[in-house]
Length: 414
Image 1 (cartoon, rainbow, N blue to C red):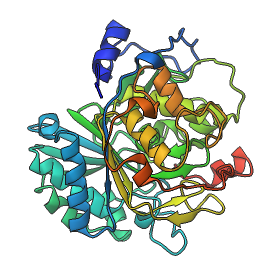
Image 2 (cartoon, one colour; image 1 turned 180 degrees about the vertical axis):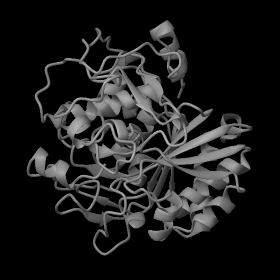
Image 3 (tube, rainbow, N blue to C red; image 1 turned 90 degrees about the horizontal axis):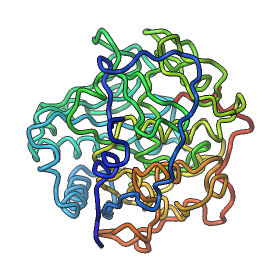
Image 4 (cartoon, helix red, strand yellow; image 1 turned 90 degrees about the vertical axis):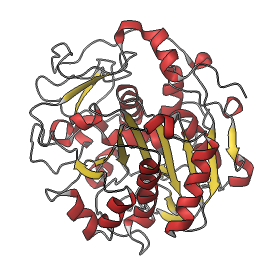
């Protein structure tokens, strides 16, 4: 299959001087008040495609994981050209923090990425010549991330060794040691947010990797590489107690529900007439806008052992499932589209159609021209969709949604 133009070429041609990234020092001053949404153009027919690799991974044995990941990356043509001599930032999916076990299993066996997958990714990056590997996530703790992860059963020293000791961990819940935040703009102007103020690690990098988990999501329908970016906006500015550099709060009041405005000076959402509490539209739009603001260069999805029915144990009825898969792609939308198909869902489903509880964020991102969500346009390498198929909801019942947005956001930690 012909790959066609890549997403940078498409976006460069389509958005011109708007730019793909806008650093804090370059950005214009934004008011916290809502702005008017720009006119958006449907680019879904021209949205680029990119191959997706899928490999069987029967267990979290370190050698098994590394072998499966190497096969997947080789199917993509390798990553040496992408990462050699560069700083690579890897966004982990640790949603909910250490929120407890799911069906008696540790978070890393169900709703978090597994540390052995993280180690394999770091080893692959180091072997490909990455000069610096930065693992980022917004913590819900004031402790250093290494201490939090070690307390959750991670072997932090093994991860550092796997990455040839070029690995560091950063908590991006606030601006950390930096004097200022970085401002990242959405090239199409944003479905809801025109820009985000974020920890500088998301800007001060050469390559950005989304290391996600294969899961259902009670608001977004599915959560993989794209939805993982929802954790980029710092809770210090987008949490319920914002502005607060010492926060351990979650983002529900601002990003999920719109009950609270962002702090003064932070880019506010467009005035698009959304009702307070309308998480079914806000969550997918914020997801799409974060992917626009911080483009994903490499998507890797841990689907070895995960959970279905929601994204974590705070969703009633969530249970483990074992697809035994690793997926990788150079475009997060095409990667997530194939992952969605593997789960037994239709990535082309319309807004508010199964499995999407609200708007389909993959459809929004295709509309913006980031990548196609049409499986017929995506080359799949390694396992076919049929070979990898693991229906997450074979009875086609709605993904379990919370009783109400209020109850959901009180329970939600990410």
